[in-house]
Length: 86
Length: 212
Image (tube, rainbow over all chains, first blue to last red; front, side):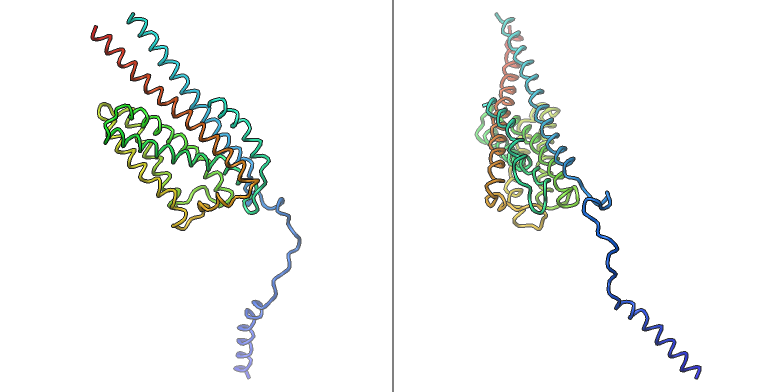
């Protein structure tokens, strides 16, 4: 009798996780719109676009300005050297 | 030509703003309108530097050195624009800033080759022109590899076939930006080469002064 009880308990204990696994998934308690999900899960596009275009504009303008200054300097040097030559 | 390039760059943001969003990438794909032309000019600059290096080394044209210096510096400029704008786009559309795939790695390698070239020319002293020309030729040899890499190796990067298949409303702003960047490249190349020609003239004038 005690052996039968022990076997019954063991079978039920073993069957419980299987039964639990067969439970249908719980429905969500509420729907979460995309805009309200956790901030860490969102990557906003505008700072990335602003960063890309900002870097390109600054780099190009910086290069053009630096090139213009170097050209002015070397042109002034040539004018001075030619003046001294005469 | 400078005025036309400036006018096109002034109009470009309005055209990019009016282009539609992309279905899977959304708004962030608009980085493409400046990223792709920058990348093309990076490859064009690397090729120009390689061709000028060939003329210097094998056809013995000393003036070609001025064009190598100009093109190599522009390869660094446009390479930096590409390698900064690309990861900003990738962060949103791939979820990561960078992947070590064939396209990105080889682009970084060519960029570093031209950074090495500019440092060599600045601090290398006598003989650095020929050593640098060899380096620039090696940089140019990587250009076809960069271009085809997206079609042969596994990558997140869009393949080259994306460009001809673009819908008209996305294609018009893209080709407008490509034209603007091409004009900018030609203007900057000519100005940078002029600076080198003028520096050579200054050197010749100082030498003539010493001889007197």
